[in-house]
Amino acid sequence: MTETQQVPADEAGAAPVRSRTFTWTDPAATAAQVGSSSGLEMLLAMRDGLIPAPPILQLVGATGFEPEEGKVTVYMPAAEFHYNPLGSVHGGVIATLLDTAAGCTVHSTLPAGVGYTSLDLMTRFIKPVTVDSGVLRCEGAIISRGRRTAVAESHLYDERGKLLAHATSTCLIFDLPTA
Figure (cartoon, rainbow, N blue to C red):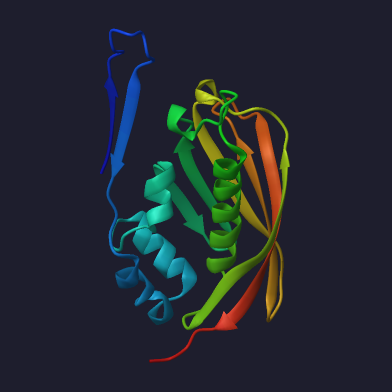
């Protein structure tokens, strides 16, 4: 659940204040399930609401994602609370979406008992992102996957299909510890 409120300006003319509250599920509950299903099975269960999505998706206000093997799309409306001091979406929020799509794409190719972590993320910002960009669509795809590393790319588009940013990511693939 996410709630955003606006408090009116005070008599001194200060700008209206906004607040945002969000909730999430303990990530340890989801982490305990990581090794028991394939990456794609886990992502599909998240999409279908059978297991909770990670807190980062709640934090940034992502509204959904579409996983398939070797490809993941993440959706998020560009919002004012994402803004930097210049009045556009902060690059860190954009990088978070790009990293999420790339990493989940790698995860979608992994069997049960195997995990991943990002080793790098090379990001290119192409156009400013604002609330006028609408619902953002971030598509991840596999470039190369080996036994120990994978390279994925992700592209961020505005609601009209214009490319806003893109990234490549290298991920380390490893066996998860057994309990």
